[in-house]
Amino acid sequence: MGETIMTPDGLERTPGRRPRVTGHASVTTDPPTHFRLFSAQDVFGLRRSAQQAATAVALDRQDQVRLATALSELGRDRLGCGELEVTFGLDRADRPTALVVTFSWNGGPPPAQDTLDLVGKLVQVDHRAGTPVSRVVITQPLPADDTKPDELRNRLADALHGGTRTTEADHLRAQTRDLIATLEETRAQREELRRLNEELEETNRGVLALYSELTQELETTNSGVLALHSELEDKRHQLQEASEAKTRFWTNISHELRTPVNSVVALSRLLLAPGSPPLLGEQLEQVELIASSGQSLLSLVNDLLDVAKAEAGHLDIHPEPVDLRLLVTHLSRLLVSSHGREGVTLATPGLEDLPTLVTDETLLVRILRNVLSNALKFTERGEVNLTVTADPEPTAPAVLFTVTDTGIGIPPEETDRVFEAFYQVRGPLQSRRPGTGLGLPYARTLTELLGGSLTLTSQVGAGTRVRIRLPDLDHAYPKQPEAGGSSRDR
Image (tube, rainbow, N blue to C red):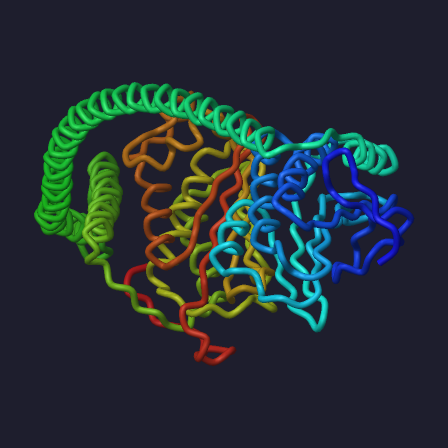
């Protein structure tokens, strides 16, 4: 083993030895710090050296006590083993992260399991049994700081070589000091824990009070919400009943009015028929006025009845292939004869290459008739133009009907209100263009009933543009339907 000397701590050290292979490949001990243990006095010195080493590498007080206690217990367990040696070192040369203490011995029984369990509670321990040399490696992580590796190794070497001789009395006094320090620290921790518990209890009381207050407020809010919900439900029922009553009224009054109005129209036509007795000039004008007024009243009654049916969901849809050429021709003749005036032109699309469409033809005629009539009514000069094109959107087949006019236009603030039933925009033409305000609302209702959409854009003095998009309701119909598709009520 070579010459040995006694250190001031009472430990034997072998000078000039190379670092021993301790089974921890990354451990370096430069300069080498080896201690031999022969007696209980050496264990006392080992405890003192452990505290000095822990202080040198800046471990806190608790870690110092843990490391010293762990080494003392393990050294006491290993006394009597051959060539028992303790090595202090750092785990890495470039950037140390842990203090490593290695016990090595030759022969002898393995460490007691209760000792290893005790040491394992204090520090990281690794028992490596071997033949003939066995080892126990203890690792204590270092605190993170900016100390350079060389400086840290020098401080460790100075601490381990500059101690004083330790007696059993010194050892007991050191243990007593450690115990007192631990008790003081425990007492301080207990006081801190008590203070934190008091703060936590105070916080809990505040949280409970806040929870109680919030719960009470929430219950009050819920009560108000329930009352409001009940009131809104009552209002909803009232509005629903009012709407149903209105629909019933429209339906009943429309039916009741249709019979006498039909009689008026029929009798006026009989009076105007060629085979009837001749009428004087004034009588003829009066009968023609009666016939015209009766026809207008009959159209209004029919519109009211259809609106009531649509709102009640009783208006049936009958999809069929529509001959758009015949439909456009029919509408053009009808509107020019009833709404045409000098200075206003009704422009319709060419009859070639019109798209195909499957929808309810009767409802489509009513939609276009109302929109075109409205445009002609409020256009004093220029033209009303109808275009029919296939929708370019690839999502689903549809047809676009666009009606543009050069009329008086609609103010921006009135754009949405024109779709309210019976609402009319006030202006100089209203007195000369009487109406009910059902045209656009009725057209939009029927359009949505057919699964389409009706949008309107307008500029005062420049005219109005209405765009109607109607989807194809049945793709299975032939592309070229026969002319003269059915019509319920044109």
